[in-house]
Image (cartoon, rainbow, N blue to C red; front, side, top):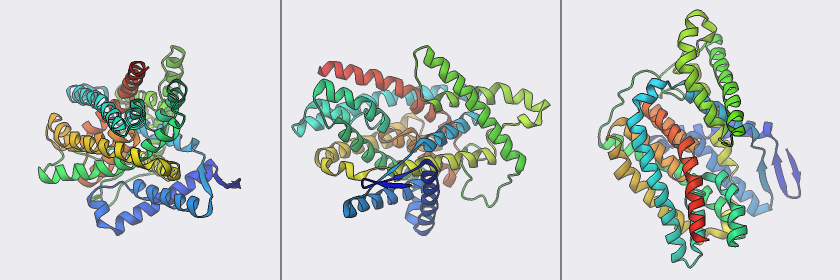
Length: 409
């Protein structure tokens, strides 16, 4: 941790340590205020948002900006999605085939709507229509990474020199709203329709709130760690191979697929002969590792948001994000829930869709985690939502953005 030129920089170790403290504070606030629990607001979201506001106050009052090294945070994301892969099997994927296609189709259509809304609102404010794309899938479905990656193109080809700031501002607002939207929507649907989970067993991430204790021993934890690391090794090899072929995917996507393959083909046969290869995904040790990884990733992401960057861009951006929020919430409540079957799984999927529609894959998973820990497991939701938002929409978003840029050129 070092203070230089009014910038307080946290190294990776300090960043993760602070993220753990933020998680504890979020947990304490959720225990203290029933409204947070009732609406299933994820604990890392509560703590992360609180600290991002505190860091913004520090910036505005004494002029010190806080920055974090986020390398370790990204490793946590790889860990998390690897556990999701180990929780799934090919037969589950086949079972989820039709719901997967339905959710994917709805999401792709929604992405087009999101860009149309962004362009329309920007035009109403007298801005260049292309600015509205920065308040569309570039920053919302795409998140901070996509906004940063495409900003130079907007600046060079269209002369939008503050494209980076606009993209980051929209992504930041979107992440906050996505973190707060998914849980309450799912709770409303579950209570209104008196929905009950049909799956049995443990939840994919963490421990259900009504479980008083869990059994984890030395070897069950090591089994889980070994399975995760073996899957990551396979994911790294697959990722490098695909990159050599010209297809660049996030590492967590290939590790997710590696986990699915291992849990489907390697674990069932070999674990009968070698007990140390017992990498069953749906056990308490794996679920807790998933919970810790996601919690640290999300708390780090939220506490590191530089809210002061968006202060001077509030007007039109707030209008664009408000319109996007209304559209996303309406589609989630009145369309996604219905086309996914009006079931408990559909309600959990809605919490995930609320996360990806304005935020990120991690936000979607955190929303679903909070809901399932409260009400019960939904294996279908944890299978199809990561596949939709961690793979398919990234590819479609590239094509969509490029197509619209060509149209406005």
